[in-house]
Amino acid sequence: MKLNEIADRPGSRKRAMRVGRGQASGKGKTAGRGHKGQKSRSGVALRGREGGQMPIHMRLPKRGFRNPFAQRYSIVDLARLNAAIDAGKIDGAAPITSEVLSGAGLIRSNRPIWRLLGKTKLERALKVCANHVSAGARASIEAAGGSVEIKEDGKAAAAKEPKRPEESKESKKPEPEESKES
Image 1 (tube, rainbow, N blue to C red):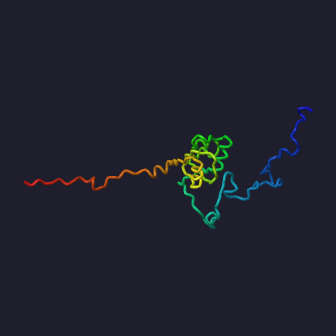
Image 2: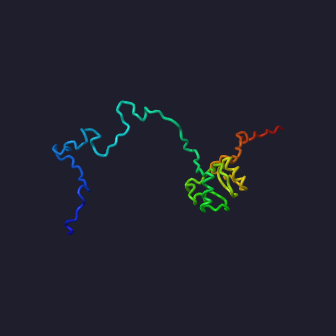
Image 3: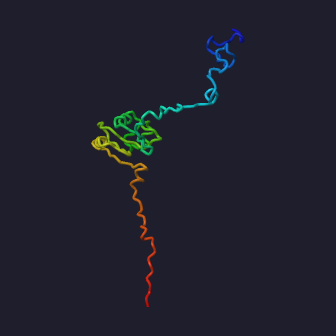
């Protein structure tokens, strides 16, 4: 084999279509772009425009609502938590927090607010520090001799914080001076 004999396998490199090179090529004149107008030029994307007709995205019914301010929770099942402790990913004697679960790969680190669910029977006492715990999970943990601590997230704590009573408008008014009669 010589250097000048080295070549790609036949058919491995397909030649690009050469447009605008005469009618005989099949892609001459309009170069496959049709005739005239905005769409025949380069760099144009007209989406959703149907002329005088009502566009399809406006004809279709809209369903549902997703609250942009809703708090999204990471869900941890008691069975998965138990399996992670059995596998040695989590120390069962230490308190179970969002940092511990994130390190074990049970929740994402960008969503530290989590909820514990499930009714799995536990054989060990766990100390859980979660944002929310279902009644079944709480009963399972306490039946095994463990404890549950509810940690409030930032939004819930701010909502429950008592607001200072504002001074009423009447108290801001200056008191009328008493006229001295002599």
